[in-house]
Each structure stands twice: as structure tokens, then as C-alpha cells.
Amino acid sequence: MKRALGTCYYPEHWPEEMWAQDAANMIAAGITWVRIGEFAWSRMEPTPGTFTFDWLDRAIDTLSAAGLKIILGTPTCTPPRWMLDRFPDMLAVDAQGQPRKFGSRRHYCFSHAGYRAASGRIAEVLGDRYGRDPRIQGWQIDNEYGCHDTVLSYSDAAREAFRLWLRNRYGDIDALNAAWGNVFWSMEYRGFDEIDLPNLTVTQANPSHELAFRRFSSDQVVAYHAVQVAALRARTDAPLIHNYMGRVLDFDHFDVGASIDIASWDSYPIGFLSDRLEGSAEHKARYLQQGDPDMQAFHHDLYRAVGKDGRWWVMEQQPGPVNWAPHNPAPLPGMVRLWSWEAFAHGAEVVSYFRWRQAPFAQEQMHAGLRRPDDAPAPGLAEAAQVAQEMAQMPDVAVKKAPVALVFDYPSEWAWATLPQGDGFSYFRLMLDAYRALRRQGLSVDIIPSTVDDVSDYAMVLAPGLAHLPDALKTALTGTVALLGPRSNAVTKELCIPVPMGPDLPGLNTTVARVESLPPNVTRAVKGGGTIQHLVEMLEGQATTGLETIMGDAILKSEGALHYLGAWPDEVLWDRIIVDLAEQAGVETRELPEGLRLRDTQTHLFAFNYSPDTVLFDGVQIPPAGVHWWAR
Ligand code: GAL
Image 1 (cartoon, rainbow, N blue to C red):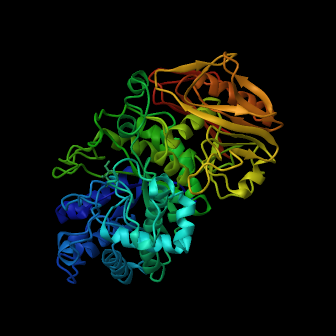
Image 2: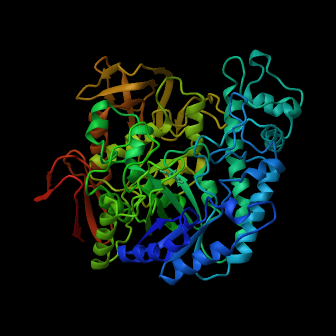
Image 3: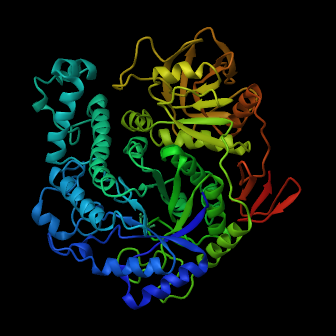
């Protein structure tokens, strides 16, 4: 598969006279894919049942005639205003019980049967018209499920569907009462029809209730998605794609990904650093115009796991300042190129820039494109064109299996969010810390789901924070160098404390006897260097103590290749742990200059310099935003 560049284009935003020149300019820049249509419902069907596809036909003609391959989006993330007349109760409802209004996007509730059917219908209409059109080489279903906090909806439709979901899951109400521990605070129900959604309770709702609602809500996304998958599968052989957004975790991406062909995601490195990442002020200042060195790579590796047979794209790549983060600096010169190459090195088939031209109107008018609103080239365009030229001159990169795997599990995120036991820390944050630690040692990483039953291809597997460990994985982990904890296998599937207590790993005599959470300014020093923070567990049992605090409390217990970590390490301690594990696993680590990251492929070893300074690595000076590769 030849790697390629793309862009997101909105023919409905521009006079038709511009389309042909736009298409020619895309081709001239080395762009070969174009995504269209995903927000254009009001132009496809201006009033119910009246379809106006003539403009779309002409846009497809023009783009394709220039040599572009087209991804067509179903427009279901932007239901037009008339849809509300049909379904006044289709709006998602927030946790305060307020319906979310029309006037932006993603205002629908996934549980609303009428809107779900209407979404299937527009997918059918589009599929009937374009499904066999060879110019349409891929279909994007909806856009960014869950973005703008839209998975959890407390609507009437959601409540009814939740009751049904609970009935199917538990069968009888006594089983549910027992599973959730509803005897506590007299929360017992006499029937499924008495169960409400877990919002607006006086104090915290029962965590089991809340986790069930989160599982249900994820399943509703999957069920909503399935309707469009069915509509399109019957009408096209082109690959089906969903386009995910970074750090949107309220639904299980593996479940959505199971029915489609390609996972794509939206990479906004500078927006993410400012908007959705923990980190010190120093870290954020240092990487202000580059983005966090690990956030993008983490998602690349995640979506390689979500996509069928490892197929994944970056559908939207930040090309300049965005509009939606608290602060929106411009990328350092070179970063658009670096982000693009980094995605290819992690296996992306396509990197597509959002958007072709900056819109002079509406919500995103301050969001850069590859071209300015006056159509002059913006700085990102030259970097995209440079990537295209460089790609033409080198053989395609090919993904290589990494030596290390990191288990990522959406229900664990929900379990942590439901029962965090401390402010400011989350499963995702812990995972990113573990991932960073691996990458600081120069390691390439595969992310894998918790549903795997064989990890024998990996020299080393990490599963921190994995709330509930499936039996198959538990067994599989005993054959490799494995690190679990903190808080791995700590709860039942219903979010209760299991007895015997966790981590309950075969071959590791260790029990977590107590859990503490600490405020962010408190750390405890560890013998030999480093500290622990946020979360500290008291470890009991006969397994060998590998690390302890200066007070003598065990924080790492091991037997052979199996290790349990009972705390959240700082960087120094993570580095010690990873170096030791890698040595045990026979995996080579490398010391890297700060901000430099490596990625190994079958054909090349890549180095990416996220730091604002020139670094020296392997005898090569790599400037800020520099990319270097060595042929294998
Ligand atoms: C993405 C979204 C795009 C656009 C972009 C702005 O989340 O898919 O439609 O809003 O962000 O950065």
C-alpha cells in the first residue's frame, strides 16, 4: 500500500468556480485524496425528502477529473434544523437534564430510534447514488463520535433503552440488585422500570449503576453505527471508515472498529497540549509549538490496533493554529512535516490535512487551513508539499511488530472515571505516562486490546490500570515479561472489590491490602531514586520486593517475569522500571536526548525531534522539528 496525502474539502463552502482550481492546486501539492460531504446534510436534503445532489455530483466530477480519490462522509453528525421538527426529542440531554440545542453539531442522542433510522436512511440514499461509483474510494461514517462530550445522554430515549439493556444483561432484578450491592443505602429496585439514569442524584450514584450506564452508552454508539454500516455494506465495496478524535474515551473504539475497515483519527498536537493534557507549565511551554512528544504517537499506535488488519489513517492533521484550545499558537516551522512523517512511520496509509482552505465564516474562521481565506498559500502547504516530494523519493515504510505491547482498555477508563478515588488522575493519564516511559527508552510500542489471548509475540507487556483482567489475558501474561499495576485487576466487572482481593495473579503472591490517593504536591521517595505520586497501594505477600520507599514500604512485587507495581511512578522511577524490565526481556533500550523519539519500521529507523533545541543522536545533529531516518 502506497502512503499518500489527503485533505478535507468543503465544496459547499466555496463558489463552484473555485473547485477546479482547488483540485488542480491539491494535485500540484502532491495531495491525492480528498474527503468531502460529512457536514453537508442541509445541502443534500434541504427539506425532508427533497434531495439535491446535483452540486455534489458536479463536485465529484471536478475533483475526480483532476485525479483525486474521494472519501465521502455520511453527514449524520450535523442533523439539519428540520430534523428537530420531525423529532423534537432527538436532542442529547446533559447531566443537568438540559437538552443540548441546535446551532452547532453533534446534538443528537445515540439512543433516539427515529434519528437512528433517519441516519440509516441518508446512508442508504447516499449509498444508492454513489456506492458503486468507482470515484468514491472510501466512506466515512459520521464524524468523531463522542466529540464535544456527546456520548452520555440523559434523555427519555436513553432511559428507556437503558432499562431494556439492563433487563437483557441481568435477566432478573434480584441479580442486578446483588451485582450492584443495592442493599447499601436502600437502593434496591423491585423491577427494571424503576431504574433511572445515574444523574442528578443527591450525592454520587452507585458506581456499579454509573459504570453500567457508561457501558450501555458505549453500546448505543455501536448500535447507532451498525445501522449505517449495514446500509453502506449492502451498497458499496469501498472501505468503511470512522474518524475518531484524540482522547475521546466515552465509547469503546475497538467495538466500533470491529465492523469497519479503516480507523482514522484527528491529530491536533498543539490543540491537545493546551486543551486536553495534564503536564507542568514548563512542559507546556517547552512543547508549545510542537505538541506533546508522545500524544500523537500514542494515538497512532492505538488506531493501528483499532483498524482492521492494522489499517489506519490520520483524517485530519493540524496544518497551523487551531481555534478551539484555550491558546492556539502556530506550529514551529517544520512541525507539519514532522507530524506527517511520524504518522507514516507508525503505519498511517494516508495523512489528510484539515482543512484545504480556512473558512472566512462561522465557528472555525480562526482555524488555519493549507490555504488562507483569500486563497493565498498558508505556511502548512509548503510543508505538505515537501512531504509529498520526499515520499516520492523513498521506498514506502512498512510497519514492524514492536517488541513491547501496552494493553489499552476503554472500560478501564470508565471504571477509573467512575471511581477515581483522587482528583486529577485518570486511566488515560496513567497509560500515557507508561507509554512515554517506554518511548523515552527508544522503544517502539504496539497497543493491544484487553481481549487478546496471545501475547507470545511480545518480549514485554505492560497492563497498568487495567481495571478488570480477562481470564484469557491473565493466562497469556504468564508466558512473558509482564508489568501490571497500579490498580490492575482491582475490581470486578461490576466495579466492586473482588474477594480474593486483587491483583490475584497466578504465580504472584501479592495482595493490594489498601489504597491511598495523594494530592498533586505530595510525593514519596523511593530507595535508589525517583518518587511515587498520586496513588499508593499497600502490597502484602510473599513475592519478592523489587522496589520500596525510603520508609520501607514495598511498591514493586515480582516473581520471575511477572511484576506488580503498587504506585504511580514519576519519570525517574518509570525509567528505572522500564530499563530493568527491558533487560529481563532482552529488549535493547537507548538513551535519548530530551524530546527526541524513535520509531522502528521494517525499512527505516526514524527519529523525530519534538524539542525546541538541536539534539545530537547517533552522530547526527537533528534541528528542532527535525526528522531523520536511517535505512534498515
Ligand atoms: C475536528 C473535527 C473537524 C474540525 C476540526 C477543527 O475535531 O472533525 O470538523 O472541527 O476538529 O480542529
